[in-house]
Amino acid sequence: MPNKKQIEELKEILLLRKETLLKSISNNRDNIDLLKDQDVREDLESAEIVSGSFTEGMIVNHQGKELKEIELALMKMNNGTYGICDMCSVQIPIGRLRAKPYAKYCTECRTAFEKEESRNIK
Image (cartoon, rainbow, N blue to C red; front, side, top):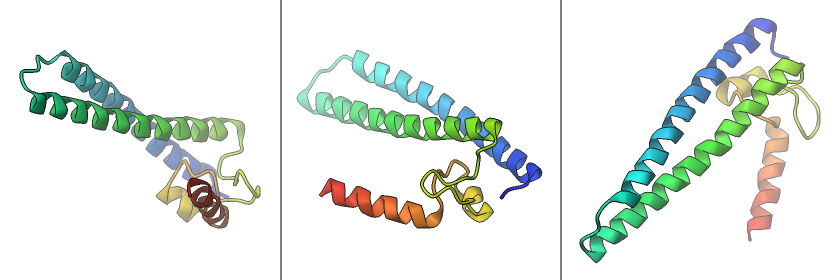
């Protein structure tokens, strides 16, 4: 289990990442708005604008998911459940938390989750 100092270090990392994501999401949304407001002269320009808008939207969606995971990790830090696997309730190793501070699963459960997820996609 991470000690208090390690949790504080991870919390700082999460807060910095959260701030970065919020700025990036805001910038990407502004870019989407700019793309939508552009005067389109040709079909090629239109395709580029639609493609750019789609890409920006995908980035915002991905960053939004990461932001939710970070907020959940911060909430767990506040209520004392941070670092506990959501599936098996064992302590997530500190090495995994350092690699991904908002990890919800231990390595074994993450592997099982990914296998199940890939089966559902097929």
